[in-house]
Length: 237
Image 1 (cartoon, rainbow, N blue to C red):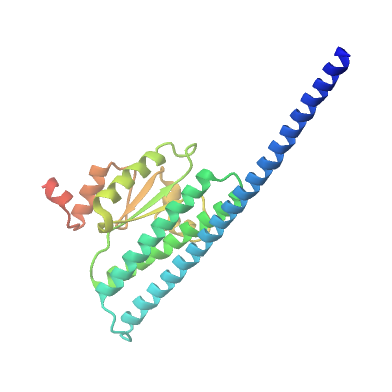
Image 2: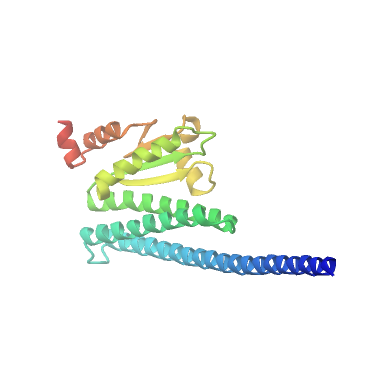
């Protein structure tokens, strides 16, 4: 009788164990499905943000062209205001994209596709900055940052940190465009223009002049010599 009770007890324990196991698998699968759906929705939102950024750049291009051809009453201040708003949107969207990949274990291919698109559109904004500078006879200080992964360029990450600080200090007084030198298309053409492929990375192009790795102090000096009006220039005097 005791053996029968023990057998039933063991069968009961086995049943409960299997039940808990399958419930865990079911619940885990449901949670994973919801997580995947959430990540997919975020990626869709990110793609929409990218399309908005492209549309903004096209509109800015139209404004610059219309003023250049004297067919619009839009002023340079209005164009620059729209430009800074749009490039701020671009930066915010790029940060969200990077935050996405930090939480994602799926859709990495889509992430890298979007990341390439964002880097390409930065070339458009760099070109727009130069056109606005020429049109409005006012310098928009720009920095191109060509980088590669850690293995090929150990100091690129440090240069990125330096540039983050420069941007934090100077805000809209400087426009910084970070470009993966391994990307094809417009980024490759831009890198060839400044001989970035034959230089040791990281490569900085500050107001059309090529520099190697630079500290924030060195960058401030270069920008101030180029006519930057900022408190950092006063501290250099």
